[in-house]
Structure formats: structure tokens, C-alpha cells
Amino acid sequence: MPIISLKNVSKSYGTKKVLDDVTFDIEKGAIFGLLGSNGAGKSTLTKILLGFEDYAIGKIKYYDGKPTDLKSKIAVVPQNIAAYLDFTVQQNMDFLRP
Image 1 (cartoon, rainbow, N blue to C red):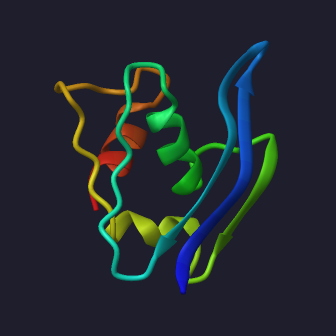
Image 2 (image 1 turned 180 degrees about the vertical axis):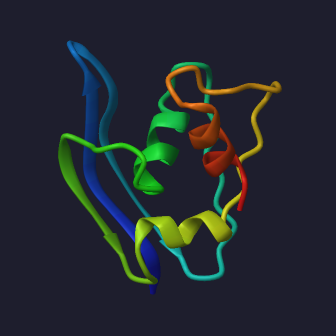
Image 3 (image 1 turned 90 degrees about the vertical axis):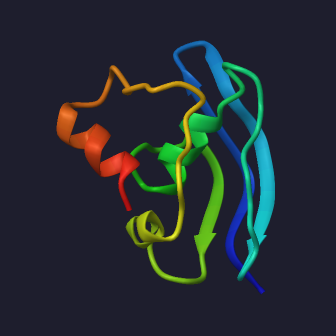
């Protein structure tokens, strides 16, 4: 049984589409990774899954709690030491720590 199910999730910033029809399930107990090149939408999707950002189209179902409960169950490992410039210092700390 999945703990998270995404169906046709899309997100745009103005006219730039950053997520296009993303669909997948994450099964309970699975190790799941988001990999991709710069600009692929990994950070945007992670922010959406954690409830930090809204999405435009699609549906996300959480079977094991609410988005903020995921923070203690995931790890974010950036390629380089980085801070999200559109976040406050507190939001960066909240986003990157369990």
C-alpha cells in the first residue's frame, strides 16, 4: 500500500512549467530517491510534498499522515551546500532538518 500517491501533478511559475503531469506512488517501507538534472523540478516537488508550496493541477494523497509529518521521514541531500534564496533563514532550517 502506498504512503503517498501523486496523480498528474503539475506546477508552473508564470509561463514556465516546472512539473508536468507527475504521477507515482511511494510504497510503505520503500527507499525513494528523486534524481535529475538542474531545473528538473526535484526541489519544487519536494517542497510540494512537504506542504511548503502549492501545486496547480493534480492530486496528492497522504495515507500516513499529513505533509508536515514527512519531515521526520525524509532526508534532503543537496549536491552542493546551498540555501533556497526564496526561503527565509528559518524556512531553510525547517526544510533541511528532520
